[in-house]
Amino acid sequence: MEENKIIYSNLLELSTSDYRLTEGEKDIKGWKVRNESGNLIGEVIDLLFDPEHLAVRYMVVNLENIGNEPDEKPILIPIGLGNLHDQENVVVVPDFHTDQLHAMPLYIKGEVTHQTEDTIRDVIGSPAALRMEEKITELDRKAFYDHHHFDRKESRVEERKTIHELIDQSKTS
Image (cartoon, rainbow, N blue to C red; front, side):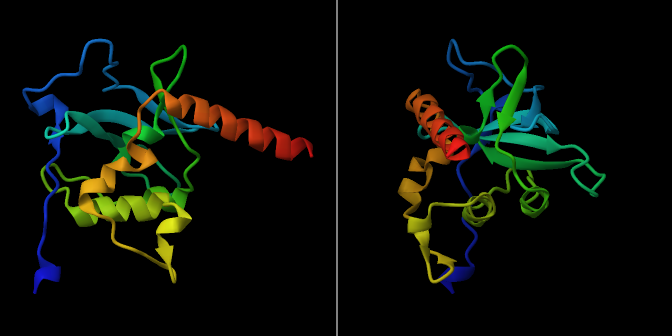
């Protein structure tokens, strides 16, 4: 009965741990979260990090009045999907569909499981290479955070620039 075993992720809230952001990193707690269209999604209420690798993995975002769901709902958004606004204390995320935000699992402190993280990956979307016959294949848990959703490296800035250039070129063609 191994398949029914609950395995918790080793993630901690930054605000209640002894860990701190490294010098030069922005503390985005309290920042508004907007999508690329400028619509308010919610507010960052904490960061979840992996103490084994000393890396932030998720923003804990309190959704605010998304679609016809009036209640606030804390969810996890992978850190690599957030971009800091140049002039304002705002985190910009992709234009998620309202259904995606509703489908995100409710964040409960201390109860982030591998299944929770898999659900987040499935809701947000994953590379086509991971899909086989409409079912997403299991990833090696050791490589789970190697996905670009968790990448905060400078190389992502150049990648986003290239993607937006391609989109702009396709609009003019």
